[in-house]
Image 1 (tube, rainbow, N blue to C red):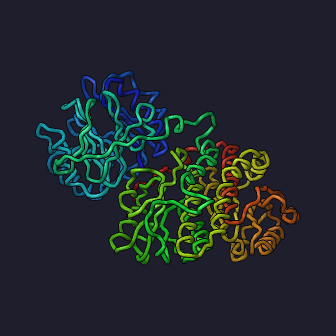
Image 2 (image 1 turned 135 degrees about the vertical axis):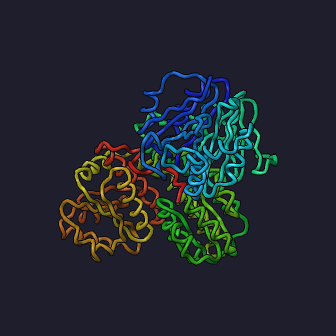
Image 3 (image 1 turned 30 degrees about the horizontal axis):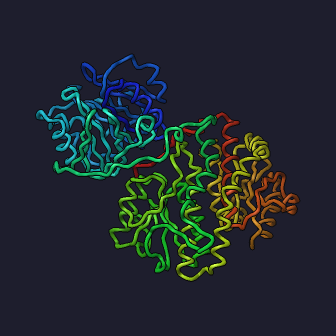
Amino acid sequence: MCGITGYMGFRNASNIILEGLKRLEYRGYDSSGVGIIGDKLLVFKEVGEIRNLEKNIPEIHGRLGIGHTRWATHGGVCKENAHPQLSCNKRIAVVHNGIIENFKELKEELQEGGHRFLSETDTEVISHLIEENYKGDLEDAVRDAIKKLSGSYSIVVISDLEPDKLICARKESPLVIGMGDKENFVASDIPAFLKYTNRVKYLHDGDICILTGESVSITDVDGNTIDRDEELIEWDAEEAEKGGFEHYMLKEIYEQPHCISETLRGRISEVEPWIQLEIGNIEDIDKITLIACGTSYYSCMAGKYIIENLAGIPVNVERSSEYRYFGRKSGVVLAVTQSGETADTLAALREAKKHGCRTMAIINVIGSSATRIADRVILTRAGPEIGVAATKTFTAQIVTFFLLALSIGMKNGNLKTKEVQSYVSYLRQLPGVTRKVLGDIEKIKDIAKVVNDKQTAFFIGRGINYPIALEGALKLKEISYMHAEGFAGGELKHGPFALLTKRTPVVAIVSKDVSYKKMLGNIGEVKARNSPVISIAEEGDDEIEKFSDYVIYHPPLPPLFSSIPITVILQLLAYYTANYKGRSIDKPRNLAKSVTVE
C-alpha cells in the first residue's frame, strides 16, 4: 500500500526523493520520511502529508537517498513508525511496502541477541536483520536477511557503510527501476521518476537489484544474474499531473473519452468483423468466474450482464477475499485489478492456478504481478490513475468486458456477423457520447448542491444498472463521506424503505429496457415516501419527468452500452458533491489507491 522511492546519481537526492514522494502520495499518506547519505546517513520523518516533511526538512546534500510515504498496517501513525527504519547502529536504513508475517518471531530472536527496537512496525526487523548479517558486504547482508522473511515485501536499503549503492528486493509487492543517464531510480510506481526517464525495468518476485549511478544489476536470491527486459513507457510525466484541473479525479473523469478510445484501439473492426484481444483460443470457454475487489468487483458484476447477454455463457462473480478460501475453483477464472497488485486478488488468482484453473486477468499496469501470474492478460490501457477513487479505470474495464464478450460470442456462434457489426458501432460511439456528457455538466452540478446538504443517499437500478448503482454509491461515500447504498430497483421495499424520508434522496437509473415500467413503479413507491428522486434517463424520455424531482439525461444508446455515460454522470455527481463539502477528493481519509496487503 505504501509508496517507495530511491535515487542514486548526480542530482541532489533530497529534492528528487521529495518530488517522487509527492507523486506517490496516493499510495498512502499518514506519514512520510527520507534517508539521505552525504557525509553520513541522515533520516527525517513527519506525520501527515508530504508537505509536512518538506516544510520541516533542513537543506541537506547527497547523491543517494530513499523515501517512503506510509499507509499504516503494523503500528499506529507516529514518527517512530514512519519509514525509513534504522538498524541499532543507525547506519542502515530500510523502506518497505508489504507485510512481514513472521516479524514477531524474528523480533524476539533479535531482541535476545541484543537488538533494541524503537517502533511497532514489522519493517524494523528487516533493518536489524541486515545489521545482524552484515560482514562487510551490504548486498550479501540483504540477501541473507530476506531469506528469513515470510510474507510480502518490496524493500530498498541504503547504508553509509557503502554509500555508493542501493539494494532493492521484492516479493509480491511492486517495485520498478528507472534507468537514466548517470543516474538511476527505484519506486513503487512509475510516476515517481517519469519526469526524468521513461526507461524502466520491472522487478519480479525474488529479484534483488543493486543500483548505482552508473549501473543496474539484477540477481536472484542465490546471486545468479538475471536479465530483465528494458521497456519504454509511452505516457509522459504530463499525464501524471493535474493538467489544470482542481483535482486528479476530475482530470481523470475528463480523460475517459481518450481512455475508451485507447482501450478499443487496434482491437475492433466493423468490416470483417473481428475483435483482437491476443488471449489465445476462447471458443471453448463455456463458463467463467470473475474475481475482484472494490470498484473492480462492481465492474465484474456489470461484466456478468455483458458476457451473459452477448456471449451466451454463464458467469459467476466472486469477491477475491472470499473466493480464495471458499469459492469453487474450476474452469476459467478471470481476475480484474487496476493495479495488478491487489493482494486479495493475487492470492485468489494463485489459488485458482493451484487448482488447475485456466486463468486470465484484466489489468491496467504493464509488468505488474498479476501479469506474471495469469495465463493470459488483457490490458485496459487507461494510463496512470492518481486519484484514489477509481474512475477511468472502471470504464476501461467495462469496455474491456464488451470486447471479451463480443470475442467469445463471435467465436462460439452466439452472435451473427451483423450483430457484431452493430455492437462494434456502438462501442465506437462511446468516446463521443462520453464527451457530450462532459460538455454539459451544469445540471449535474446543480443537483450535487441538492445532495450536498443530505446525510444519506440511495442508488437504484435494474439489470446492468444495478452494479452501476452500486458503483455510484461507492463513489459518493468514498469521497464525500456521505452514507450511500446501492440496491437493485425492486429491493428497497424489502427493508430499506424504513429509512426513506424527505431528507433521503434516491438516485434512480432508468433505461428503456424490459425493466422500464417496473422501474417507474419503483420510483413511484419512493415518491410515496416523500423522498426526492433524481433520475438518470435517456434523452427523449418524457415520461420519467412525471415521476422525478430532477432528471439528468444522457445521449441514447442500447441499455448495456448506456452504462458508460451513466457511470460518468454518477462520477461527476459524487465529485461535485464532495467538492461542495470541501473534502480531500484525491486522498479520501483512511483509503489508499493500491491495496497490496490482505
